[in-house]
Image (cartoon, rainbow, N blue to C red; front, top):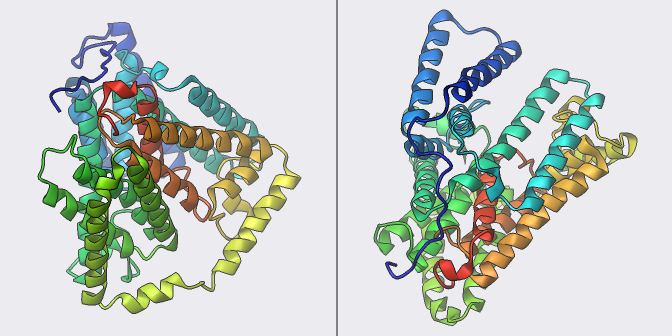
Length: 450
């Protein structure tokens, strides 16, 4: 590894405090506006809760100013805690991004120009579609969430400008995923007091997410990245057997979510990743290791399900469910709404017009932002897919985060998005940003075949 050099780009400002005073003054104003809007949407909290929350926000702000990279690492470690909206991770990253903005470290130019244009166009169409909203408060919140995650992805593309920062992101994400998988799997296979917090109805793992169908897919990119790390060590300074164990923990965690979408996501992601690894120059030598890891994973999943007597439930979940008819009906309604409302019904308005959620990212976008919105959003997803494929074929990693894993993860997410609304998944925007990072680097400057 010491024989390779990384392309680096200096920050526009040092990690410490040093922004001009007038620019720093914008930070309290921005945070105040955010808090005012949240208080408008939600009932005022108790004095004690408000005081504790205010002190917490101030502490996070000072952390983001004084220890910028540490704050980012903590943020990624909190990715698995999404029991409320906005989630704690959103608050922390809002602080980090605000600090980056006022200190000159929000480098939007690092993202590919086409990607930036598509994001701006999609947000503009979201704003336009609000004219048809029947629930303005929900429309405003949904639009704000979309804008926040889009900006988060653009900020992350600028943040990851070295192997050290890629390692911060990877370790934080992996920590969140592994802890989520361990707690949720234990709550399903070996129930413990309080473990019901990590399950959905006591039968499906969900970690600290609101839905098993989000928890399961959240683990998959982490599993793929650590698997490629096991096959081609780069960023993680741990032994290969431990990497394989982490992969096994994450795979078992996916299966105990009993999410059919997550199963399809995982199958597609692994297939794409292994195909890329095998067709690369010298990839045939990795076939035995790949098959061994697959066998270990399969044995681990089978053993876990047998120990927990969950095989019958897995078989039941794999079959067609009675509520699938309602989901398909909701998707047909989404297409009808797109025909009746050319600019869409507005952000987050699908549930206001349908008794059942869309259960499809593409149907939601079509109904809420119209045909043009779907074209722009689809263009963003497709452009990211093409960049990921190019990265994988020419060997461009995101400063060591494997391009085969990123391509596999993105393909899995795109397939999963046909049966669930994924546009507000934080890990979707993380993977997209890492793909954009890799696309801006030269293949000869990173590990060959990465």
